[in-house]
Length: 291
Length: 323
Image (cartoon, rainbow over all chains, first blue to last red; front, side, top):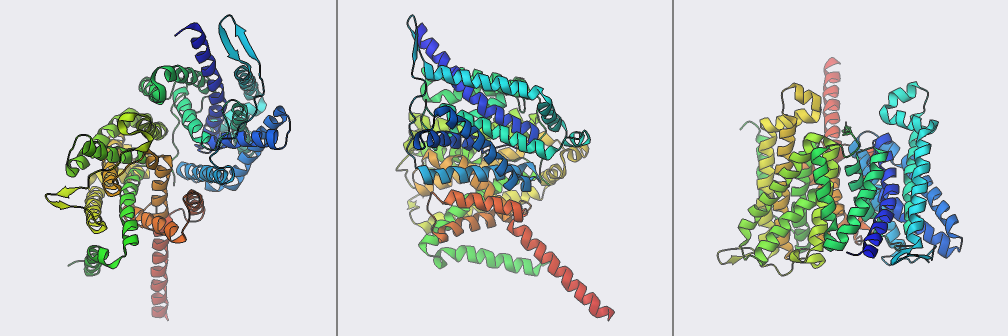
């Protein structure tokens, strides 16, 4: 393995890790604050990619506008799913799981009927190539890394502000939050909006590099789940750390074992679960059962 | 003869089940064979739900059974019967490993880790050429006893009925025993069960192992009936379907619920003639509607109606007496 291949693997890993970080931090936010296992997270990612495709190619708007529209529309859709389905099934963990599974199936099959199996190709946004001695880097990948890190940093500062603190209070205890004058319902709306919007922007970012396809949602959901299991349930920093670890491991494992790279990550997860049950940076969340 | 009505009903049911291949047409018989396969899976889901473990990984163990049968029959040249047990034991060992690693760490860890296990099983099997890749295993020999070869749907119906009744009776005996009462105690509350001296982890582990075993049995039955296996039929969507069967039948009816749910949710889409693309949408809509309006499932509804009608009858008797 020469230097050029090594650096390319590393950049690919960091890029994929950034996308995983966006999706899985939304996932872990919803899991931590609302105690909902959001199976539809991957489908929001898929829909985000398609919204970006539709706005930038079919309507001919600039890419950045398409990205903003995709994050906003996915956030609104997430809030609508919360109001329409999840709020009425809040009786138990299992019920909410099945409700999000139901929504995710509906979203996937409807977009399959609408768009078909064919991949939709977006024109590349950033075309440049950076050459440093014999290492070649594509500008599109660096752009994704830049935007992902920008969003993660702003999310970090958002969680430090008053709204973010009240979110963490609701995550600790709904009763205490209500006593302190925080409306849990509003926080749930906000969490759902931010969580699904993060998925939407991840889909919009990845669409020009990989193509937009209906089947992309399932793979990213598996990866987000792995990230959250390794990083710790409900821990944002853990998710961030684990996404980059998984992205880099996946990228290098693909070079050596090909299609079996999922097994490599899975073995890593089994070792981590054995030594740290709650993941790298988390404690095991209690599972609220039904009835 | 303590329960004459119950015994008469049971013997009528057995008679009906034995005569069914000659009553039903070929198409319905095929659907019934699928219902029996799904029932064995849904029974496993309900068993774990009794101990309050949510399983979204049963399709993985289903795949283990199917692939054990397929690989051992085509590559190693075994006969059909030992492969059932082999698949079951492989699944039980994997379930033991997964369970003993994750069950002590809480329900959510088990839930997500087990789901990953099933997805990894599917992806690995599909990606490696040793297991036939995405094309799967084809042209498996049919099972045979001596010179008698299983060819028609009737033979497979009876094979399935035999396996399903073993499964059903095992679960019935378990529910009626000390183990089943321990599961009931865990279902009422983990802390409550612990205070009664129930070893929660060990009983949950046992639930996981036994249900995985019977899922693998169901998988080898499916493989022998279809005579081919493809990895696509053991995906995440199938695990969700299994949950839906238990949910529609009734989550609190651990034995009859899965059977009723599997029968209803297999026959209705077939008679509505929905295509393969629309069927998942129908499934999802049914799931959401059942959660919203019928949280205890069809049997829960029937049971409530039965009780309320008894209460009304009793009340009317009381009023007659008082007047």
